Length: 335
Image (tube, rainbow, N blue to C red; front, side, top):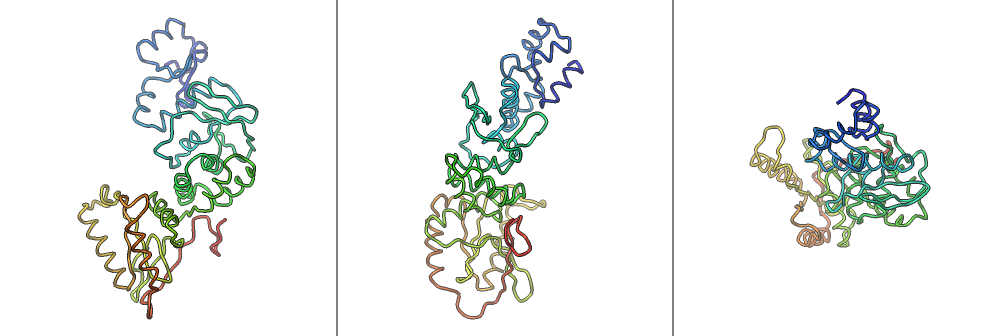
C-alpha cells in the first residue's frame, strides 16, 4: 500500500475509504483490482481493510467486531459514539455468550437503525466519553450501566464484578452514572446489578454461584476471606459464613485444564485436596461448587442450609482476616 494510504488506515485501526485511496493516487481500476484480487477486503460500500488485517481478525470476535464498528462510524460520519455491547468489546469487558454482532452506537441528537448497526438517542456528558484515536467510545462505567439496563441481571453482575476486580472501574463511578440516568429505561435493573456486585469475586463462576445462593434465600456471604491457624496463614476461601464457620469454594475447570507453573492436572488436584484438608483441620466446614451445579445449586444449597442451621460451637481454632473490595479506602468503604 502507498504510505499515504497506510497512514490513513492506521488512524482508523486499519480501515480506509475509497476517498483515502483516491487521495493516495489510486485510480478506479486499481481500486477494483485490489478488491477483486482480495488484497483489500470490503467492510461496507466504499470502506475497506487490508487483507492481512482482515485475516488476523477472522479468529478474533472482538477484533472483527471493532473493524465493523470503525467502518460503520466512518460511513456515518461525526456524531455517534461506540456504546453498549460494542463499547464493552472495545474495553475488553466480560460479555454474555448470547450477545449479538450488531454495532451499538449512541448519539445525543437522534436514534436510527441501519444495516448491522443501531443508534440510541441519549445524552453523552463529556465525563462519559473516551477518545481512543480510531473512534470515540463510552467509558467503562457508562458502558457497564448501559449494558446492565439491557442484559440479564446475572450477566450484568458478572461483568461488573470482573471490572471492579480488575480495577477497571470504581463503585462510585458506577453509582454516579446510575444517578445521572435516574429516569432512563431499565435503570432500575442497572441499579440492582450495581448493588449486587462485589469486586472480590475472582471468576464468573464465583459471581453466578453467589447470586444463585442469594436466589435460594441464603444469606449473602463474605468473599475472599483469609483463614489463619495457630501457625499462620492457611488458605483464602472464596466465600465465608462467619457464624457457622462454613467456607464455600468455587471450583472452576481452568486450574485443572490449564495448570500454571508447569504442574500437571493431577498435581493441581492433589494440592487442592491437601489445601482443603488444612482448612478442615481448623474445624471449618467446606462446601464445593462446580460449574455443573449451576444454575440452581440444588445440592450445595441443601448442604449449606443444613450447615448454616448449626453454628460452629466451641472455641475457634482460627482467626479471620477480611479482604476489602478493590477501590475500597483504608476503612473498607468502597470509593
